[in-house]
Every structure is written in C-alpha cells, then in structure tokens.
Length: 95
Image 1 (cartoon, rainbow, N blue to C red):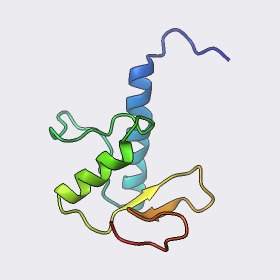
Image 2: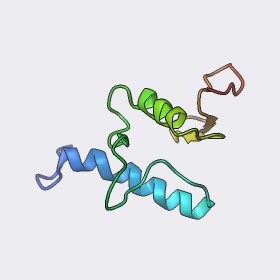
Image 3: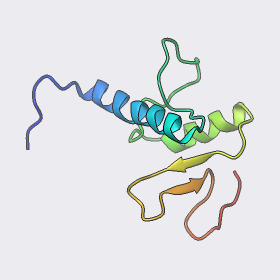
C-alpha cells in the first residue's frame, strides 16, 4: 500500500510515538522521557524509536540524568513492560 504524498516520513517518525507517550503518561500518571515541548533539552535525541542506537541513547540519557525506576513499553511484545536494562530471561536487572 502506498502512503499519501502529504505524509512526511521524517515527521511521521518523530511525532506519533512521542504524542502517544504523552497521552499514556497522562492517563497512567507516570513521567515520560518521550513527548514534546516547545524546546527539547540539548541531549534529548528520541525522535525516531526505529533509528539505530535508540535504546543506547535512552539508557545514556537515563544514566546521565540520574533517573531511577525507569520502565519501557513495547506493545509488540506479549509482556510489554520492562525495567530499563532488562533483557529476556534476565529477570529485571537494573542498568
């Protein structure tokens, strides 16, 4: 299926997941490192979750800012919630 010509691939990669993150954070009353503001911090580089190195950049940001108890949500998985740094079969290790 072809996408309509008015869809900009760069903006389409940038906005949907960040807007979803803001709505879910509001609904569940949880902070999020994803989202939008008029100005983003200089080291905020989470525009495209499918870009190479996204998870590594997120982990570096979390560590640099001393964030704790961080989770990630991946709706493609049967169990979508994971503590950051957790890998399948490792039982929730901290980063």
